[in-house]
Structures are given as structure tokens and as C-alpha cells.
Image 1 (cartoon, one colour):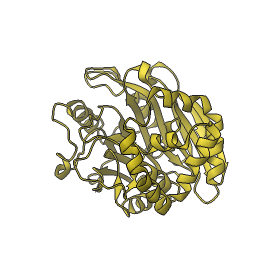
Image 2 (image 1 turned 90 degrees about the horizontal axis):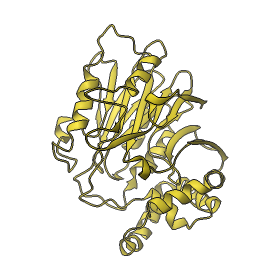
Image 3 (image 1 turned 135 degrees about the horizontal axis):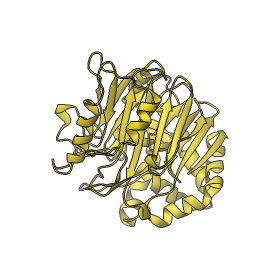
Amino acid sequence: MRIIEATGDPRSIGRCTGEALRDQIAAHIELFPPIPDRRAWDRRLPTFLETLRRHLPAVLEEMQGTAEGANVPLENVLALNLPMYPDDLDVPQGCTNIAFADGPDGPIWGKNNDGGPPEQRRPACGRLVRRNDAIPVLVFTFCGMVATTDGMNAEGLAMGHSSVGSIFQQSDHHVPIRLWAYECMMQSRTTAEFVRKLTSLPTRGKGYSILCVDRQGIMRSIEAPCPVVQVRRPAEGERLMNCVNYYQLPHLAQADRRTEAGKLNAICRRHFLDHLYGAEDELSLDAMKQLLRHHGDVSICRHGDSDGSHTEYSMIGLPRSGRVLYFDGYPCQGEYSQVAV
């Protein structure tokens, strides 16, 4: 996994990204051709661009720079970042997010990003972005994609997402939720600021659960079967939250287009994490590493399991110290590397 740094205006950040990740972006496009339905893409693209110009002009400019730096057609970069999900999308069972409100190492966010078989793995990267008008952020994403809502900013706001799904009608005039979350992350110093900003516009996307924690240990989960967005709060005195691949708010239980059998692994991971620690247990960095490496009847580090999900990479954010740890591959197989935000 490459970790790159990009500084300056949006166009410069994009060009730097494209140049540094040129081979990886080309490999991503070859592995997953981004425009499967040319007629639908050509029909919808003008509205996509209009929405980006209205709400996310800096992000659009960054994507234009990425295409220039990578020497690929702009429409390929746009298509990677503006996927057209089918109504019958089969959402994978992967990705586990965990947050600790406090402990000897302060608040902590951890995530295992899961995907399909290793031979189908998309090239991933970390991007440390210092835009002239924004809070610096470190985001983990797939090469050519601006962001996937995983990472931490320099103010100690950390977050990660899990794919879930949405039954609701959406509009191409709605802002793409992952690109909007990237912009919100660069403009928010706390969990509260991020939640207020993210929920200020209707969004479009696959449907996600997003877990946030900030330097003060404020935890929230945003459950977003787009364009609907709801906020889940921890129970009184709760020191740990998680989000996985289903909505935990009861009134959103059927908002994801998934069967109960399809959600079974996610439900098992949620209940395993809910009952793992007692009031006296220490929620430390070592405890987070142990969780992300866990194997058992319910595994967090996943090697195919019953549904074929494999952990692609693992991330840990330490909001108070400004450090992010990451491991490329199964976290049970090595030590995390570290980068300062």
C-alpha cells in the first residue's frame, strides 16, 4: 500500500495523486472497468457534473487533476468516483468499524476493510491531503477514488464506513455521499460538526453505516440508506460502539434490500462486539489491535470465512496523538506501520 502526500490547491493535489499512483490507477481501471452501461452513463453524466459543480467544486477539480496526473481519460476517474449501483446490488458482508470512547491511549477508531478474493483485490492507498483551505486529512481509499470515508483528520476526527444498502429512491441531483463525507471531513473539527454538515444535504449512494469518534471521545454512528440519514448514539455510559454491514436502528432494519440470511454474519459481528468488554476492561491500543486480529466462531480478521470475505487492510486512528496505524493485508500476519497526520 502506497502512502502519498499531496499539498496545495485541489488541482495540484489531484495531479500529485495521479502522478504518484499512475500504475495503480491504471490497474484499478483494468481490473474493474468503470463504465459497464455506456448509454446510462452518457445520459446521467451531465447531471452528475452539475451536482458536483454546485456542491463539490473543489472535489471535481481534484478529480480532473488526478486524471491529468495519471494520464487517463477524465471519465474513467469520474466513473470510479460516481458508481451507478443497480437496484438489486448484492452488498458484501465485509468491513467492521470499532470505536473506543476513552482509555489509556485516548479515544480510538479501528477498522478492517474487507472485500472479495485476493486475486480480485483493488489497489489501495493512503492519501495525506493538505488542501490550502481545509483541515489536513489522511484517507484510505482505492487508487483513483478520492475517498471511501475511512481515515482521520489533523483535528483528531476519525471515521470509517461499512456498506449496507438502500431501498429508497434517489436522485442524481443529490450529492454523492462518499465525496460529500470527504469534504465534510476536511471542514469538521468534531463529531458534532461532521454530523451537522453531512446531514445538511440529501445524498446519493449505495447506503452506508459510518462510525465517528473525535478527540473528546464523542462517538456517533450515521446510518444512511441514501437519501435518508439517521444518527445512532451510544447508550448512557457506553464506552464502545461499532458499525457493520447492517443498520442497527430498529426503524431502518428493512431499509437495505438485504435478506436476514444475507445479514447474518454482520449481525453476529455486531453482537460479538457488543458483549465483548465489561465496565472494568481496559480499552487500549493493544486491545484494538487484538480485536482487529481476532479469529474465532465470529472472526473480525477474515480469511474467506463462510461468505468469502477477506480482510484487505486494517486501520487504527488515535485522535489525541494524531497518529494513524495501518496494515496492508490480514492484520494477524504482521505489525502495523504508522503515519502522523
